[in-house]
Image 1: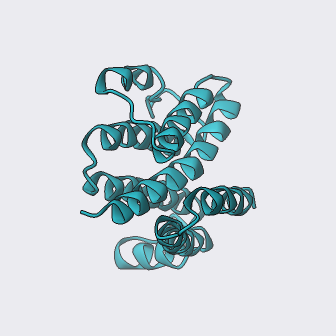
Image 2: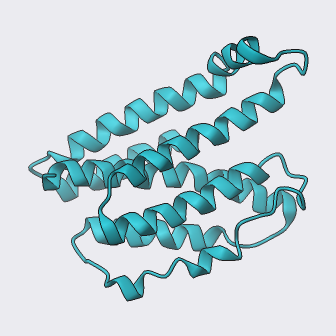
Amino acid sequence: MDTRSLVQYELFGLWLLKRMALRFRYFAKDERCRGSSVIGLVCSWIETDLEGYRFGDNLIDGSMLDDLAPDTEDHQSRYTSSALDAVNAASIMLDFLKTRDVSLIKEVADLARDSVDMLAQEMISDDLTGAALENAIENHPLMVEELSLQEYLWSLAGEVAGSADFFGDLIRANAEVEARLMK
């Protein structure tokens, strides 16, 4: 795979993780627990990698994430499942830094959609099941926004990855993404 494509995947995964980290922060607030900064550290490692500094495998240690993963049976926050997905996504991104396996980025995208799926299900009537429930989830404003966001992030990552002014466009794109994620 060419470097441009690899950078596009890495940016896409980073921005998805940042989105998921926001939901981890909501969980941490609800449950009065720590850990948001650890996921932020993973994001920083990815950004540093994009700047061209490669960590040795021994410096990237995902064990720090092990204690962050919430047990969904032990917490009441509506963001518990999303927090678990964020921790798993951070771990997957660390694996990506070691292996450069783009299928891992697809797993992060799936986790991001799964998180939204769970949040949408909580907001939909309990009377729906089967195809009616799946249709309601697919058309729920949260899912529509998530799918739109993922399309936007993938496209933007491609623009930045192919830019002649990579670092300038990366700074601009990061600011643009941050603004959109904070809506």
